[in-house]
Length: 326
Ligand SMILES: NC(=O)c1ccc[n+]([C@@H]2O[C@H](COP(=O)([O-])OP(=O)(O)OC[C@H]3O[C@@H](n4cnc5c(N)ncnc54)[C@H](O)[C@@H]3O)[C@@H](O)[C@H]2O)c1
Image (cartoon, rainbow, N blue to C red):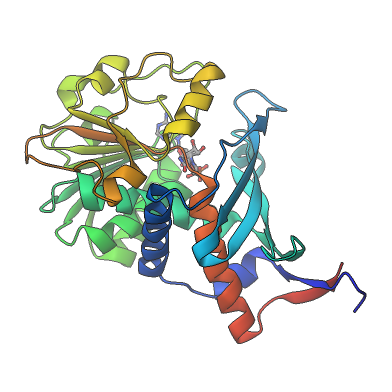
């Protein structure tokens, strides 16, 4: 080993094989939001570059002192990739030693991106959805459609049915079969976005993010008392549908403001609270069973670094991955 030391390299398979359960990811992500509420974290808005239309590569740094987690995720989303057999999301995450700044680990970030996004939805649902929520609508049955359902089953114990919609019939059928087998819920394929929203207690949209969206979801489709979590910005919900919410939340106010400056979110309501304010009780979550609540979760590095340190510690514990010289 040279004086610079070595890093631990964790491939996609190395990370997946650790089998960290979703409830642990949810717990650590919620704890990170508590730290944020106490202003004990550093998580600047993520800058990005855009080599293709509607594609991005984002740089996402964060530091969570309590978890001794510091690092950056360098993650891309390229909507044309699935046509060529590649995933939409790919990327790497680097962890640094907060004492010296030296890199200590490089890992594939696919698993983390899937799980921490589902976990953030679950944290939001825990505080903002009705606890007796039974029916979930999923629009976009890919990686996020799967991890969000998995995470919601952890916090919403009364979930019985999933109405699933996807523009790709093959993806939809595969999703319905897989999710029925995995979660023992009634998963029903539906033929239109409307049918995946109407009569649902929780709605998650996970289609592509579009700079110039052509949204279809109308205010009247969404049930009073419902909770909605768009992961695809304002691509699916019409402005009037978002304005019909009693509480409009986000995972991070600064990130939302940053995106607005870049030309996204041209017509959205004022933010009632962000998730740090909600989980810490600074702002009440759901107060009435009939409230219509939305949390636009943009995905922040705080969620990644909280999950990454779990991954790193577990990998070290069982000796996973490969040590490489710097
Ligand atoms: N907010 C966050 O924290 C966060 C994190 C990761 C991903 N995302 C976003 O979530 C979305 C999904 O990502 P993914 O990794 O699951 O992608 P994916 O490629 O695995 O899945 C996307 C699915 O959506 C389907 N689809 C495409 N257009 C659709 C439409 N109009 N209606 C319904 N379904 C449609 C595709 O057929 C595919 O099955 C992307 O927009 C991504 O940027 C958000």
